[in-house]
Length: 287
Image (cartoon, rainbow, N blue to C red; front, side, top):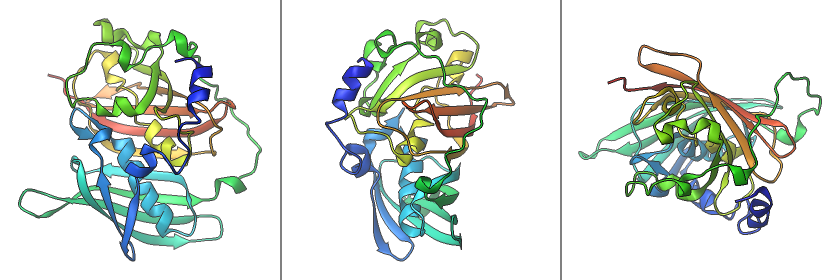
């Protein structure tokens, strides 16, 4: 898919009326209590994707707090979430004129009917449209080849059934220079870069940015590791409301030690603005 083709596809779904919006929706049951249904469509290796879960919790807090845009949200992933019903409980910590802070937890039930906390987050919300336009930065957009020179999941071998359902919902075109792992020749650099969007053409918004920071293949693959890389903690910063069109995502890992690594992500929009950043700590299996 070229950048022009993606722009044409963007008319197929709109913000508020797309699969992502439906699958991250929450329903108010009582003050501070929301029902959610975690979709199996956002799983990878049978686990619900962490960025998708962050968006679900982010929507609950947007409804519960007086401000609607996530500015920063930190999540601790306590147990693996499964597709199916979930409950999100929110609490307002503080409200101010420009920022409000809240916390939320997502719960599911185990086989014995006991409630299990899956994720706990602390977040601050505001209004992205009121931020000043003054930008002073040394950051630069990642250099990624044009989309037609990049590769997506559809260009590789057929995945194991149920192992990568999320890829069917994403427009993901990976920089060939970060794809050595797919050919059995990882670079050892711990880098991953890609064009990113939703497969139904929906334009990005602050909640899809929470997905974007955790949607690429793990940088551990380019270090030469395989298998699941579960997130322990993820902090995302939303810096600006993204412009329409495909995003560019760059993720790097500088240090793997003691069975844990960090992933630092940057997300850039079509206006060459850094619209989101994140850092996560993830566990890796070394044997």
